[in-house]
Structures are given as structure tokens and as C-alpha cells.
Length: 150
Image 1: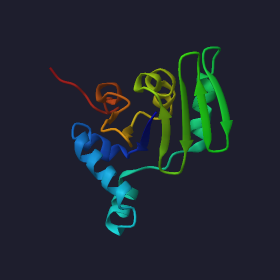
Image 2 (image 1 turned 30 degrees about the vertical axis):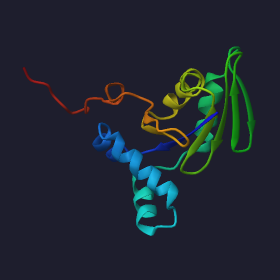
Image 3 (image 1 turned 180 degrees about the horizontal axis):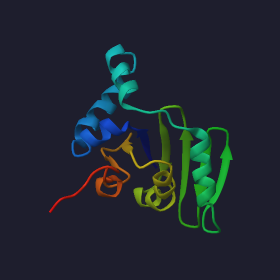
Image 4 (image 1 turned 120 degrees about the horizontal axis):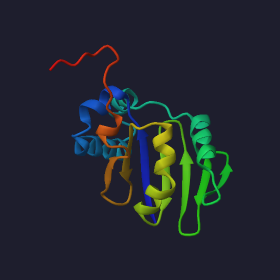
């Protein structure tokens, strides 16, 4: 089984570092290995937003269907269907999930998380794998007051 951590990054950081994922990956790995360092803790607090437990559960309930079974036990959520199982642990600044393949996460978990918030960064804990759950083009939007000229 693989273990992944998911972080909700601030919009400012996500926009600036979207195409610099390896920098975010290295920082988050260093923070996880040295959480007692005050400078890393301050940076981590600055670049991440809190994860709203209630909104995550609401997103899960919206996606619940005959093909997706959900079991909620405090901060642990189990998602499964006939082919895959994912165990999701929710904390204040991090989601942690266990799965056999990333494809099962893409099928069961990521659609739910995209409806929660698109600026989520995924880091493999026991495998060097990282990235965004939503492509930048899907997230980008024009400012309401922006006018295009030709």
C-alpha cells in the first residue's frame, strides 16, 4: 500500500509554484522530516490553509452513490467500491490517504477533493510521487473586471 499526504496551499503560493512542483515537494518533505525547526514551521503555516473537516465530509456525501461506499469514523473515512479501497485521515493541515494504486485514488478520492478545493498538492510519503490534483488550466479564471482587446 502507498501512503500520500495532501496539502491545501494558499492561492498565492499555488499560482506562483504551480510549475515549480519539485520545489514544493522538497520543502514539504523537509518539513515532514524536521517539524521541530521553527523556520520551516512558519513557512509551512504561511503556505498552507486549514482543511475544513465539515466541507470535506459534505463533498464526500455529495459524491456518495451506488458505486461508492463510505464509512466515516471521526477523522478517518473509508472509501471503497468493488475494485478499490482508500483510507483517508483528516487533520487540520493535512489529508493522508492509503491506497494500492494512484489510479484508485483518481477514481474514488480525487473527484471528491476537486469539488472541495482545486489547490491541493499531493506528496507520496513512501514513494517519490507528487503533483496537483487539478491542472492549472482548469483552475485559472479571468478576473471579473478584465477586458480583452484585439
